[in-house]
Image (cartoon, rainbow, N blue to C red; front, side, top):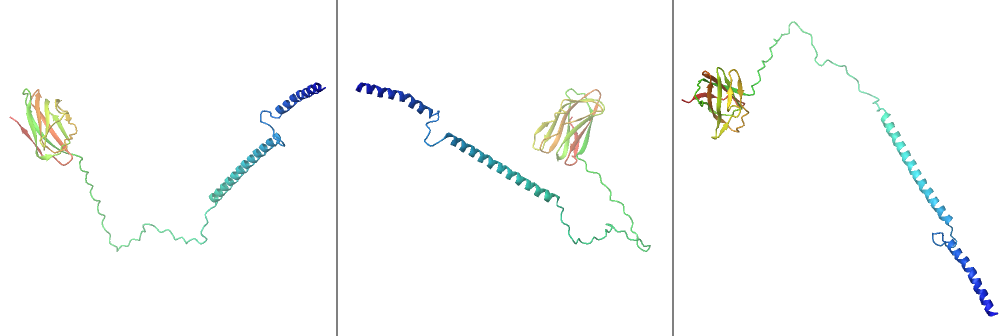
Length: 245
């Protein structure tokens, strides 16, 4: 009798175990066990209520901004279209008198002569020139030396050479400065001067006054004549010609 009761109890326990196990698994639903007295629908309702509150707050903020912008626009329009107030008592306007009144002439009034305008003087030149002449330049082989001497040292801007009767070759053209330096005039050195043409040197940037200019000239043809013009922006240079034997 006793073994029979034992077997019946074991069978009852085995039959109850699957039902309990299935009941425990059904309560989790992959989100942990359900607390007693708590429903998942309550969580969803709370989330929906929070979302509605958030949307309501955003909608109220948007309406407040629109209302504030509308008021500002109305205020600007009111200020812009409001004409300025005029003075109720403006000052009286006086008649417009002529700026240069004309008075009637009288035969006894003295008449003054109309003096002519002051003469207009020409503008001063931007540079001052002075020239020297060298005539009868020979055909000596290698050329002959001529010099342009300055009565007092002067600043020089340009040197121009003009041949009149025959072609003349300028072998060398040298400037002598006040400090003793020698500068080559590049545009005139080794330059052939053809009759009727004028040749100008580069802008001389010696930085000091010039005391003399030496040139070695050789005629190609008959005896040649050369005119040398010295230009300066600091007054007319006082120069004279010197020929070496």
